[in-house]
Length: 386
Ligand SMILES: *Cc1c(COP(=O)(O)O)cnc(C)c1O
Image 1: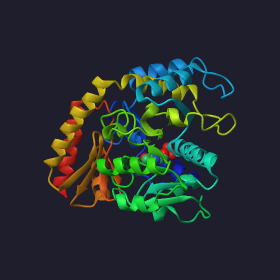
Image 2 (image 1 turned 180 degrees about the vertical axis):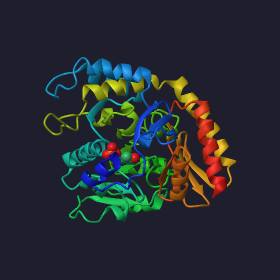
Image 3 (image 1 turned 120 degrees about the vertical axis):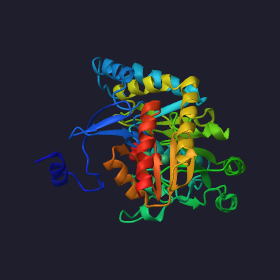
Image 4 (image 1 turned 45 degrees about the horizontal axis):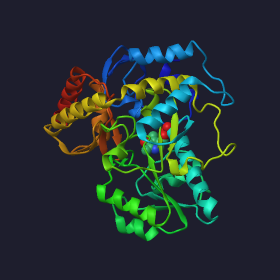
């Protein structure tokens, strides 16, 4: 049996896979099992921050692999404590909880927000999230996700979520009350179509939260770790979250989740209240220390510059109606069907993603000018052929 046949025989068919098996890569150039090359404008959904097999990152990860791969959370490890220090120093947050995925990072944020509320009053447990959001695939994070399509099949869902319209301050006001413990949102709704929140909405959310003693919880799973040209997207809005979660690109391709807590809520989860066997795994943490320590201001300025170049080139392409997002988190509204464009790009050696009815680009943050130009030229010829 070949790769595809074996996969189809033995793996649950929850993913609509494309007809390609990727086997290796270097930077933003990947190769499939037939030896065909692709320019990567997807990073494995915003995960491979420095592309495939970045030399410095591989060195950091293998050094840890050769030291010890796992210890359990009964013991201290250096990568885990170094990573927590880096995260707190770079963001001004006070404490971190480590897990293994975005959904888990959000689960922790949700538990912490409920604990904060119910410590004050057992009824203070409602969390406001936004319509069109995406927060993960566990039963609770599906509940938090404000899209009806995600609320099927797996009833009963976790109670206690209500959904406001994104960028609609009145809708948020109508739901806020002292029974709410938090408002949770993505600064740019990724899966929802790469839709940024407005400055006014985020400022109003902060004010409404303060008036009702609610926490601001920000889901930076996709927007975080340099993706938008800032280390975390909330910096674009000049807002300080009480809690924020991140995952995807944090360890540059290894599974990790992190939930960060401000001074105000740093004691909200005491010993025994939460945990994870793999959370803060030393190999993933060593990868993340390498990633975070390299995301300095110079690097982020380059992301802003190079992504602006990509935006300007995309704007010139036939069939591109509009572009949204920030930095290297890009949604493209096109005249022809996004799924069709994705398939044609794949045939021609370019990996792109979609989000709702848009083409979505999330290239590795260190993609070279040469790789960018190759990718742009494939995208252009695909768009012209449709
Ligand atoms: C991907 C994503 C998640 C879920 O992360 P997993 O690692 O797949 O659990 C949650 N929130 C946002 C905003 C995401 O983009």
